[in-house]
Amino acid sequence: MVYNFFTSVLFLFYSFNGTLPKNETPVTAPAEVKTMSATQQLYNAISAHSVTMPGYACFEKAVSGFNILKELGKIKKVLITVIDF
Image 1 (tube, rainbow, N blue to C red):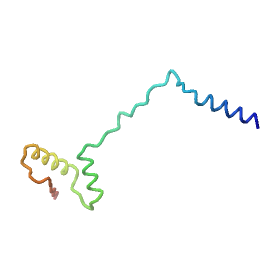
Image 2: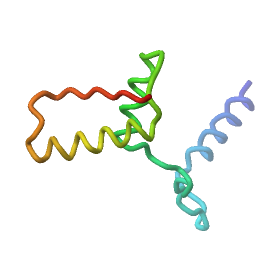
Image 3: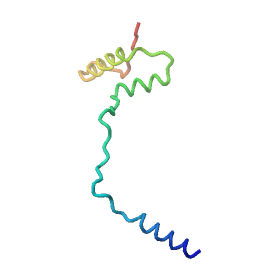
Image 4: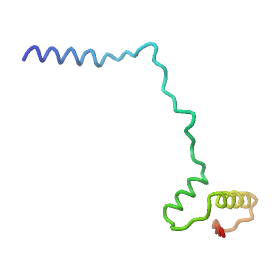
C-alpha cells in the first residue's frame, strides 16, 4: 500500500514538471484552411431554412450589387429579392 502511494506521488511529481522540450515547434493552422466570406455565410444560413435557392454565383452577384447600391445611398429598404431562372 505504501509502495503504491509513493509510486503515485512520484508519477504526479514528474508529470506536472512544466518543462517543454527545447526542439518543440509552435503549432500552426494548415495553409489550405479557408474562411468563409460574409456572402457565403449568408447564403448557407438562408439555404438551411429554404427548400429552393438560386445558384451561389447568382446570389453573390446580387449581394455585391446590393452592397454597391447601398453604399451609394440608393437603397431605402434593406430588402433584396433574387430571382434565378
